[in-house]
Amino acid sequence: MTSKLVILRDNEPISTAAATLKEHGITGAPVIDQHNSPIGMLSLSDIIQTVLPEDVETPRPAPEVLCGDAAHTWELFEHVADNIETAGDEVVSQRMSRLLVTVADNTPLVEIARVMCDGHWHRVAVVDESGNLCGIVSTMDVLAAMINAADEGS
Image 1 (tube, rainbow, N blue to C red):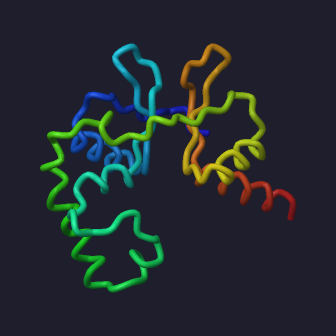
Image 2: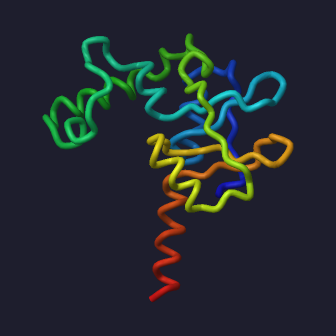
């Protein structure tokens, strides 16, 4: 679990959120409202959707994007990079996922992994018994824990 959270505000521009995610080297972050209550999650995919050309079919299967026509893929990435600043008119609340998946801070990792797999979630918010946001678990956290457990077992 990551307890040193990067938090996004619901009213901040998408371009600012993109810069924040890039600065911290993360792919998503929880979103809070004016009352500091967690209300959603914003991912890089949400941001990319903001600036994709209208003629691009979405969602595109990852293998096609990553392994398909390289020239088209590079063109798409360049378009996103060139146009992220123009996304400034949109704010985080317009693109975030409003379904915030949460788990209690005492939930076993295996249960968290099951929630993530069953719902195809890449990150879940961790809350304490008062419902306050205290961390986030990403698929990378789960993978790291599995690798560490395997290493300790060998």
